[in-house]
Amino acid sequence: MTPPYFRTSAHLLVCQHTNCRTRGSDLLYRALWNALDRERLAYFKTGGSVRLTESGCLGACTSGPVMCVYRQRDAAAGGSGGLEEAWYAATTLPLALRVARAAHEGTDLPTDGRYGP
Image (cartoon, rainbow, N blue to C red; front, side):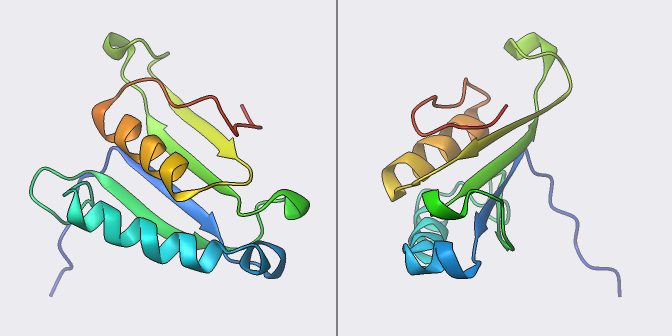
């Protein structure tokens, strides 16, 4: 049997390496998972489109928890029409949720805490 395919608009990755876990990334991941589920933003919910994944080291070890987001940005929505990525340091649940909402809605990603492209 073929697994179901779920369309996503964005993929969020939360680092679970040692330094980030020490700074609460495991709690951030669980809380964000619950919030995405509750707000029906998770890709497996009707109308949801955000995928959340635990990841290995994202390279900003002293500034965790670290999260990155990838999404396909439609040129009509103000993007370049290509893959957009953003990296966030010292990520809190409110910030992660704002990122997820913006990714789902196709609006500009928050700039606070952002350290990547």
